[in-house]
Length: 319
Ligand SMILES: [Mn+2]
Image (cartoon, rainbow, N blue to C red; front, side, top):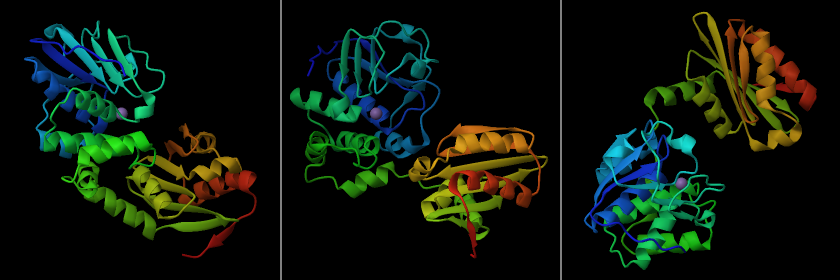
């Protein structure tokens, strides 16, 4: 582990990646508090925005985040949880970075002191370990935030290793319950999103291609979140159409296993996009397109015909 000399009596800016997430803000906040104990003035900054999921930690710790700050107003720049300059694009006058702490592969940011530790799985883990070695005394809010950073960046500990779990156990001590940390990183969905998902489920049509379940539905809007929800409910591929005045928008999601069966939703929705005189694309597990309005049945049949080419015969399942 590389050591760094803490700056003293500086104007410190701790920067983190655009649309800052929980690990980004938590590690910035705790590092910032540590640096304040050396007489530094500390600000936290990000590029463009803070992610919606950070709402609870921002409130709990009263974190003030400066959007697109000007680095010329500071004389010590730290960067956390960020692996490329692209992620800091809208920050002004970023030149020299004094300290970088991150856990991402292939970090391209140059810094006087560069601590990149992929095995740590989150920047919060690294900040915890460095400050622990410095005998920093963490308060409860700092502990909660570091735990939230670790839990959220490891997909609820699915990607955690023993080092990360050890750090988390130390952070929680006997004072903080894991469920309180989970509550801190859970965002309640919007009521209109939830209504859309439930409507999409009610209007759903279901098809079986052997052991794969493909569902279609239609809504007025919220097609993306609804297709994601239908996959969570149990579909292998979910396709939701939304008619908006003269436009048809289609969104789809799929489970990982369809890739092995030769289905690529980006390819399929490029075709569907052409079919409705518009454009489409996306990723292998998330395709979408928009174009001119066509009947739901016509478009559904066209998509089924594309799926038949990859998956063979299907039968409709009554719902
Ligand atoms: Mn991270």
